Length: 71
Image (cartoon, rainbow, N blue to C red; front, side):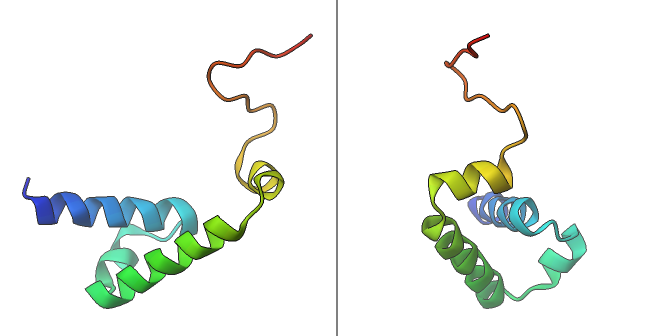
């Protein structure tokens, strides 16, 4: 795979992960629009507090690797 193809898949995966859009819809975006969507996702992500991130994106009972639950 070329660098451009690797970069495209990285962008597609990023948008799909955060917005849950189908592959075809993401690929239909022109490059400048796809970059704008990626930029806006990043801005939203940066503004979120750690508590919001846990509540909205981590499944219940999620524990990062390296940490143990206390029972």
